[in-house]
Length: 330
Image (cartoon, rainbow, N blue to C red; front, top):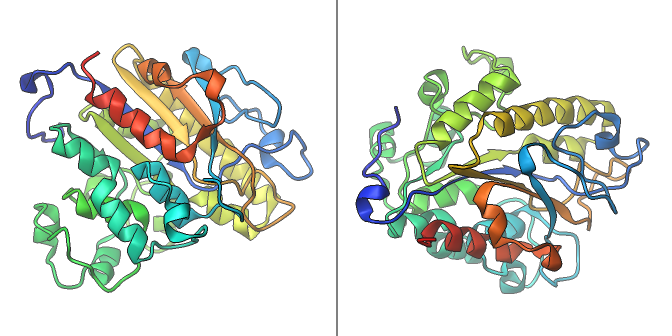
C-alpha cells in the first residue's frame, strides 16, 4: 500500500478521486484508413472521429478539447501541456505555440500554477504515476542524491542543467517523490511505455507488462490518491515517425490498456479523464502536429463539471474544472 500523509476524510471534506491519463499527440481525425490509424483498429475507447459522437463503455462521455488557445499556428507540446496542467493560456503568455521543453516563462507558470501543487496546498494527496530511470535523474539532477529525491527533499527552485518536460517540472515543484525502476518492479508506477519494451530494449532487467497488468497497477495506485496523473508519450513519437503500421500496432495496444483501466475502475467512487495536448498520430499524411481538436473522455462524477453545450472545451479550462471538482465539498 502506498504511504499517504493523511486521508481526505480526516481533513473534513469528502473523498474524491480522479485519474488523469494524458496521451501526447492524439487528435480527432477523419474516419479514413489511408491516413488515420485509428480507423484501422476495432477500438473500445479511442473511437473519436470528426463529426462522430462515440458511445463509450461504462457510461463514458466523449467531448473534445481545443488546444489552439486562440493563437495562430500548430499547437505544440510545451505550451499545450503547460496550459492543460495549469489553466493558463500559455501560448498567449509566450506569444506563440512552443514545442519541446518549456522555456523560462513556462517553467515559472508551471511552478506557480500546476494542478498538482495547487491541490497539494489544499491538503489533497497527489501522485505522478510515471517512473524515471536513475540514469535520467542523475543527468537532470546531478547534485542531489537519490536519497534526497526519494525523500522529497529537492529544493523546488533547483534548476538542474538538463532539459525537463512539463510533467517533470510539475513533479519537482510540487515536491513529489520521483518514482524509479524500483517502483516499476514493485508495481508502484508505470513507465511512459507501460509495456516496458522500451526499457528492456535498452538493457534494463524489467518485466514486460500486458495492457491488463499495466492497467491493474495504475488503477491500484490511483486508488490511493485524490489526483493521479499518468503520461503516455509514444503516440507523439510514432506520429512524428510517420509509419502508419507502427502507429496501428501502438494504438491497438493503447486502446486495450485504456479499456482495462475503464473496466477496473469503480465510477461511483472515482473519476477518469483521458485527453491530449495536440493532434498528431491521427493524421499520418503529415509528420507534423495538426490543428485538429483532441479527445476529452470522461467517466464518473467529473462529467458533471463539463457541458456538451460548450464542446469543444478550451484546453486552458480543463485544469480549473479539475480543481473545482476535487476541492469542492459537493
